Length: 119
Image 1 (tube, rainbow, N blue to C red):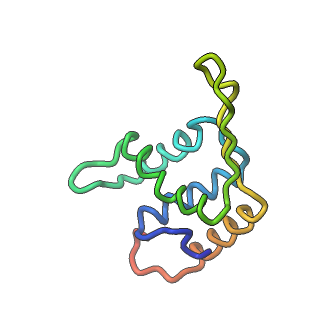
Image 2 (cartoon, rainbow, N blue to C red):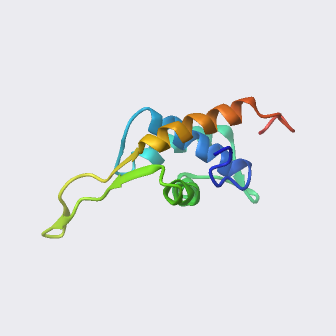
């Protein structure tokens, strides 16, 4: 659980933020992306020569979340639609295993040797 699918520094940072946010409690609808985006934007991440924007954050968060789903770390409730409208909010939270994995991931990231000031 020391990587949770993070293949580069950006994905590792996204997984850290996902862990922190979901350890705080369930995220409703787009709350997960909305809470992570300001942190990423403030850090000045770039995609090629362009600064990362909120749209990029919304798209890039899906890759780490794929691995969180794959490992069974997330509990996601998607309510049925009634008359063309959702009957409630989408809810994303950690499973019991997910809580332990998130804590282990954060511990591993915080105690890992650093190769640069940016990781």
